[in-house]
Image (cartoon, rainbow, N blue to C red; front, side):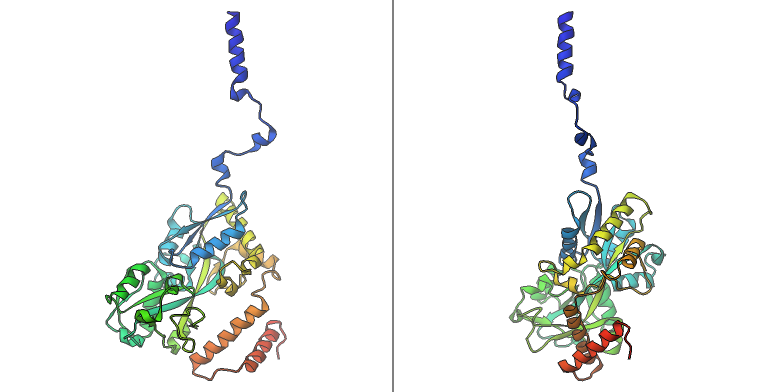
Length: 373
């Protein structure tokens, strides 16, 4: 009996549960809690879009290995992403096209959208690409022909429909993904394809001007420029597809980082507030080499008319107004110069010489600083 008692005591003493835990070990949360700490899920457009790279850039400055983590989720396009933001469990943010937000509101696709959608920041612009066969020389040549506009839920489909309507060109649309559409264009099954993506879009970088197709210029008439920002595709963007002396007129579509309608004070809400503070506080890092050049177009303090900003983002900007100042001076000057060129072209006026643009920029700086003349 005594031997059995001694044996039992030895077994109890050697059991793992009997080994005392240090204070640090006792404080460690279970793995399933630690790995979920501070996670926010960011839905992007599909993999062919640059928004995936933008999400990766955000993760590179947000993730700290302990209290913050950005988990990109590849979506099916801006319209579906907007639905996911409202209804899909776990989606905290989405990168959306601005014209898709406006379309959803105008068409009442998600009733009460103004009451539950808030934006964190306006992001970069994406360019409208219209690739066509060589025998198609003008947009009007696409009338009654097959043109691919991406999946039905994609932002490209919304933008293309609006532009063709503004240009009064009736086309027969198809809804293949971009890779499949490019192959159909090669085979002559369609006359053209549309794609809204930040330039240079990876899908077009490997194309050659000798492959039998080219980018079509959009007529920048008043109806188009009233709805979208005029811009150009150049040889710097697509060296083997656009001739150096023949930039292609097109338009740009704004993008925005939108927040889900989360319950104030919930864990997901706190995680999103933590994300905003890290994103805004580390924004200047995104302008460094190694990150996508589109970040240089972003002004996190820019406002979107008719839409509300996520309150913690608005509060951060109010507390840190000087830090939130827009692009670096040299980048702002380059953006201003492009704007002047594109507006002159849209208006049919002569391009200004550099000296004239420099003087306008100085006047703009004085105006921006409140030194009105």
